Image (cartoon, rainbow, N blue to C red; front, side, top):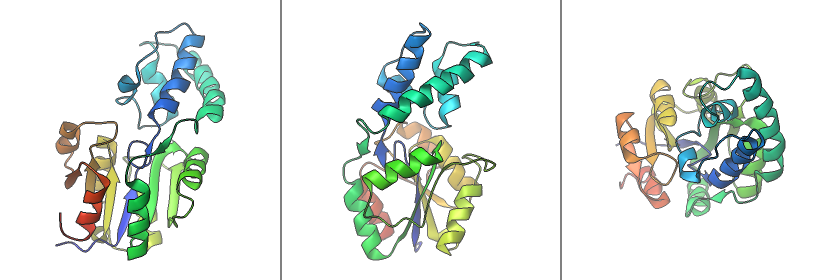
Length: 220
């Protein structure tokens, strides 16, 4: 059995339910351009590769690049006001993080959300958790599934790849784990389904936060 001593978490769809705030902000942009809007569930398949990708996939096909860029600026203005309105931790996450911290498990976050938003959300929702590192999208650092940030966090933890679990809700996270030579946990409460997590080789798949604790305790 593996002796896991560190966990790197994705943020959106894993630790925090950010769906409504993201969906509402994008829909306001789409309404501005008189484009069709989407239901929240539709956005589950669009989130995960950064804001520009989200806007591109939400606007009609073949929307000019200039409109995408303009829309992105508008989105950032709107999201800056709205990104904390309904966002909250998933059930059991706060308790899980406190339990893991008490056990001495090293914790970190690796997100494709912009770095300033990532850190602001983490400070608000997890003020008592000491993360080794908390990374969002940063200039000159490739986004997930590139493993650069995961390796950086592992080095900060001073652990081997085999001692670190990578936890996320999407194929991007499972690919990041695989690229970083880390075991992965796919969570079923996020933005993607079980089939996607299986197709992208999740080491474990869990339906609630307590099961992550069981994996750390080698009782899963």
